[in-house]
Amino acid sequence: MKKYIQYLLLGFLIACGDTSDKKGNIQTTKDIKYLKPFLQRAFNYDTSNIHKDIRNSLDKMRCDDSLILLANIFLSSKLKRPDVTRLILFYYDSKQSTTKSISFLREFMEYLGKYDSATFYSYKAFKIKNDLRYLDYAIYYTSYYDVNEALIRVNEAINLYPDFAFFYFRKANILVQLKKYEDAIELYNYTEKRFKLKEVYRNRALAYYLLGKFEDSFKDANIALSKGDTTGESYLIKADEFYYYYKYDSALYYANKSFNSIDNIQDAYYIRCKIYKELGKYDLAMNDIETLHKLDSTDIRYYGLKARIYQQTNKINEAKKYYKIAFAKGELTGKKFYDEMIKKK
Image 1 (cartoon, rainbow, N blue to C red):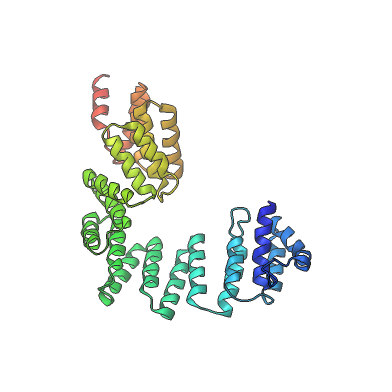
Image 2: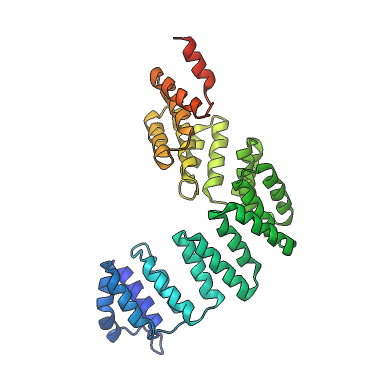
């Protein structure tokens, strides 16, 4: 904890503009005494006092990048005070609204999951600097809360700036969200000719996978991984490739790696559950399928896979129960096994 207090103190001193002598030694004598109550409250999570301390101190600080350092310190793993970060960033922007201050606000809103606000700041930055990257950010954030509106905006952007290749990649991602996988793949093919980035191969691998073209999906996922991709989606497709070829130990290795960096964690639990089932680790398989159900009770894959676990462990009555629910909900995987069980009655 002492180390984190030092980091916080250093950030605050830099923001106050009283950091070092001519030799670069940190000057902390009087400032530590002044900041001690502030630091104590910071680590006691006393929200009202921290806000008061910050407001009283902001006008004494230099309004430059050192404030950003202080803001980021409050997002550290130990402090976790986004409310204070927000206060500092809004102060920074009110004093000098630049693309830098707006970009920090955009990133902060993304951190909070407030994508409508992140969209607002992206457009604001675009109007100041006319940098197409900020327009792309705005479309990206819009896709989180209104995918149809995002499609309209990306089409407008392509009409206005047809030479900016990344808009085609963005549109392909949006089409995947809209489950228009073949159209998305066409655009990924176009963007691949312009730039061979790992993101293109990773996202096209996902589109192929969702379309049921597994061989093409596996090929693209391998290219993405060879280019240094470390996202959960590529790892999970790689896991399913090994599963597809009955190499379950290798499949489990990649499935476990996917958990650290995947957007849809339910898919990771589903794939790993299938692998555990084939490895005969039924307790672990059941834990994963129940976790999947807790995360998303509407995911119909739960019933079919749970039925197959029960069937494989020779719990036939339970298997029949869950197969019936799966079929009623439109999940037909395993129907031939169910039909065979009915015949044996």
